[in-house]
Length: 72
View (tube, rainbow, N blue to C red):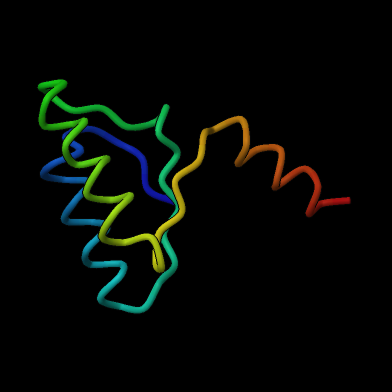
């Protein structure tokens, strides 16, 4: 799971590094932000269209619910 700031710089570098290493990446959208809405939104579009095999986009709530169900 990757969260943080600068969706188009720091998060992008981390996501690409993880994908290069063969990891499946989870991005909770409500735990990401960028310094400009336009670039943040553009990167979310790229994540959705280019990395859909290696990357799952979700919300923090959906992620917590998944973890709760797995713990049972």
